[in-house]
Length: 262
Image (cartoon, rainbow, N blue to C red; front, side, top):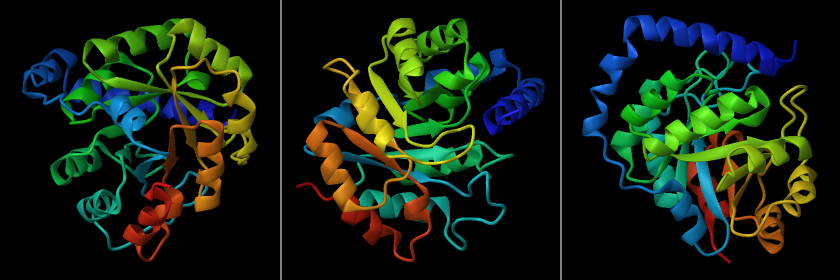
C-alpha cells in the first residue's frame, strides 16, 4: 500500500465519523451564510508574473515534528498577505499533516485572500464542509479518485461556487483531468505521492500537453526565485509553496522574495 492509499483510507474513516457528528443536511443549513466573492482561479490568472499560493502546513507526512512552532494560523496567513501572496492554501488533513478545519476558519478570519482547502477530498460531504468553512476553492487529486467520483465532486464544487484545483502527477492523470472534467485550473505536483520524491522537471514535462487557456499551478519543491523565473518563462501561472515558507525564521521575508513580480 502506498502512502496515498493509506491517507485515502484514513480520510474515508474520518469522514464517516464527522458525518455522524454533524449530518450533511444539518451542515447544508450553513451554506446560506457563505460569502463567495473571492474568485480563486481569477486571482491567479489576473496577476502579472507568477502568482504565489502560500500555504499553512503544520507538518509533513514523513515528519512527526511541527514545521513551525510558536506561530498561530492568523500570524502566518497575515504575514503571507503582507508579503504579496495572491492566494492562500490551508492544509486541513489531521492524521498525516496535523491540520484541521479550525485552521481554515482561522485563516478566513485573518485574511481576505482567496483560500484553497488542501486536503484529500473523496466524499461529497467534504465539499459542503469546504464551502461552509470559508474556503473559495478545493483540491481534487486525480490519483486518489475514480473517474466517476472525480466528475461528481468537481460538479458539486462548481455548483457551490467553489473553484477546483485538479492535481496531476503524470501524463495519464493529466489526460483524465482534461477528459473527465475539462479542468480550468490544473495543479502539477512535482512530488511523487507514492514515494514522496520531488522532481521539478515534472512541471516542464507536462506543461506542453496542457491546452491554452488553462490556469497552471506548479506544486512542491519550489524554494528559489530563480525557479519561479524559469516557470514564468515557460508559461506557469502560479506556484504553491508550503514547507519552504513554514521552515523560515522570517516567513514574511521568504514569501516576499518569491512573490515579487518581475
